[in-house]
Image 1 (cartoon, rainbow, N blue to C red):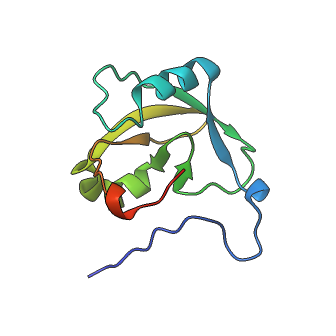
Image 2 (tube, rainbow, N blue to C red):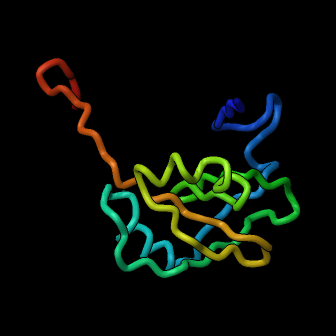
Length: 120
């Protein structure tokens, strides 16, 4: 059995600016803000276009853009588990070969217990 650990962050001593990042085009960023990340399936999906900021820098298998973006390798490893609670939506990364997928989580659990919580 293989066990995988998905870690947020960079190797010890590395800085964020040393790695490639994904950014959506402005018009696609507005589309994502409206249709992704609200806990519901996106029924009007269109393959939005991202571009790589610092394209010559090392690229991870999983990007944290406005949402989580997986390359094909990461999707192959994690896709089955992720699709039970969300959508893996195809997208385009300008200048990059291979498929990429944006994850839209559609399972939201209201885990807040207002009687035992303090918030402002």
